[in-house]
Image (cartoon, rainbow, N blue to C red; front, side, top):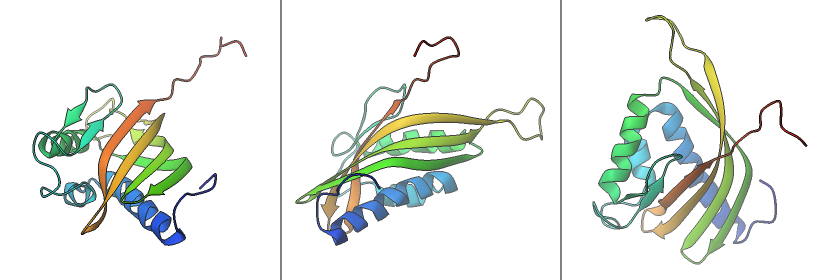
Length: 156
């Protein structure tokens, strides 16, 4: 983690654990674990209470839309791994903000059926907003924005 965390060491550690659980669930393709990371049905309904923006997607509002989006992503992703960098945490009362860079390695489509596809890399800057609930820190909002990289002809 870079920078100076804001909040007690225990709070920051708990938020980092919750943030790590998000990426571990995605890597494992575990929708149940991912569902546990997000605010519960007691804190969010199918229209309000949580928000998600995947790179290139419109704003998704409500638990049903958010969880459905992850189910779709998992169903169409054979392999994904996240290497988080530039992680910053701020805790203010019952809200915590995590910003990070998701360095993503995923499996591309195979040219031939039954074969493994090539690995594809990408970079996304993410903002994850957590709420402290009776069940611990739960994800309230996720926003991912792609980092555009320049080509060989980029002046610099």
